[in-house]
Length: 129
Image (cartoon, rainbow, N blue to C red; front, side, top):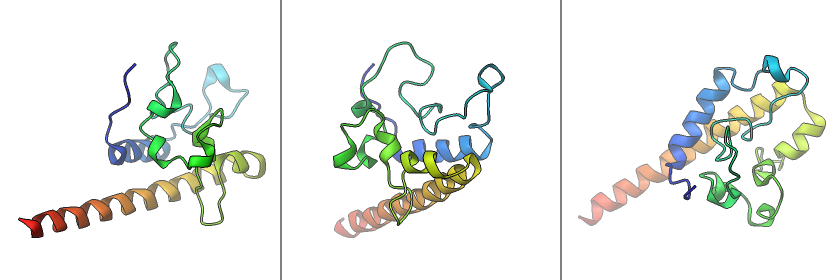
């Protein structure tokens, strides 16, 4: 599978929609386990596929901290709060609801940040013309 060239803003918006529509609810065939953020989402390049795609080909890769890129599940190491909470730490200390609330807040903030950056870039590009 080639590098995931989806627009990161669209990927994050989709992930937020997936989250808000209950996408991380338990599945009847896997009721015994909580769903894993990103890994159990269509956002993941390895979602619902038998071919393993390297994580560095994922659309989320640019958001992964440099020091976490060698981890088995790098997206678990995304800092989701100003205090540095990650999915990895939240899985140990938070409820599924708290994890989803934290993820939702991070997604909204990251979407706003990217939109603001792009708006600024558009104004700068327009000013150059």
